[in-house]
Image (cartoon, rainbow, N blue to C red; front, top):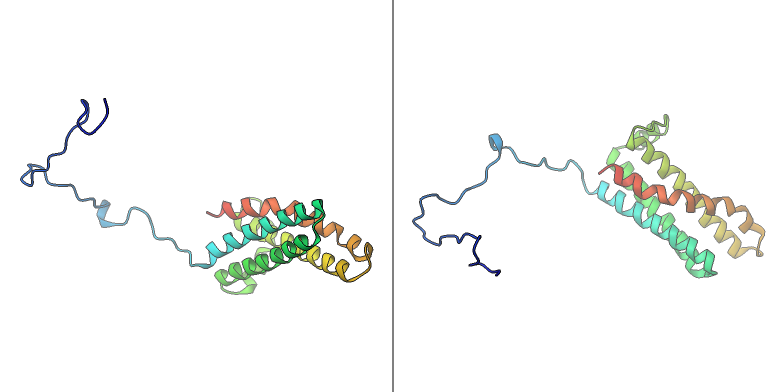
Length: 171
């Protein structure tokens, strides 16, 4: 038997003159239980746009495999736009571009911020080169410029899976 009056469940009194008043939650020393987030809107935008760029690269790889050039071109360009906006959000959060460049000075595998800047730079370069190679191939004769962008397409497709986990490390 289930329900509010089943055996094993206690019924709450609705009597206003109860002996024990309703408990009011207060934290230790009046401090909040969870600290307020130090992030501004830049960091969530950085995470979101990095995910959009990675998803766009995945769609571009699928479009290339299935022979859909219009979708391939659109998703490559959206990946470049999203990763550029993501980079802007990260640099804006850091305060000045020099801080981003200082992160590229040394690669520290134990630092999520260092790995994130390296992955972001690698992916942005590969995605930009893939989009540029595809755009050049669309304007040139088939096969000429597209072959030069081959390394960039595979670089963008291979570094894409690292972008989303890298952004999740910073949470």
